Image (cartoon, rainbow, N blue to C red; front, side):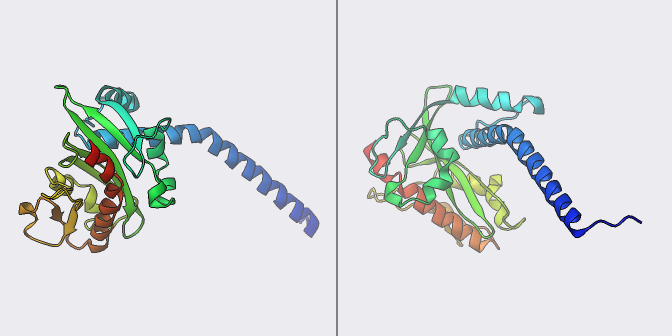
Length: 241
């Protein structure tokens, strides 16, 4: 049986590690454009879903093209505002949305807030904004669409990384998301109150609240905080519209 010196084994191991590292880096670089494209398609699909225009492609292979076409058809404008509600020229709303995690690391008054404009077949408009926060096990996020009064919610969609199935994961179910339709983020006096996620049986009569998820307290609280924090960044802009 042939024996190898420790030096030989060490050099061989180093060479193999380098080769594997180079191969993995090459594969990662080759896959990155596809990963970025999938991320963009996912965001566009969620934006459309918030105004109930996501639909489904007739062929899975055609999904990307289908979403791109629907997005171009219905999302007729987009812009970025600052905390004071002023439109920021030269900023791309979709790029800000793709890097929304970076915005969360900034002081709130220094963040930028994207807005997407949806136009329906009759020429009516809705205004869509992204929201992002923390659930029990990781990030939660979504999109809220508002009617032209910049107060009444037209639709909502949420998603998560790893909330508990049957509990916190229920935030991305139709029954929960539909609770937000028709709710208002400003009260009768015009003050911002957000949408509270409450453990209550009387939220149907409350225009500023929805039912929390039974057994998903931490996720519900995280979603409550996410809405209050993120939507507050649009208050000055919405009040000026």
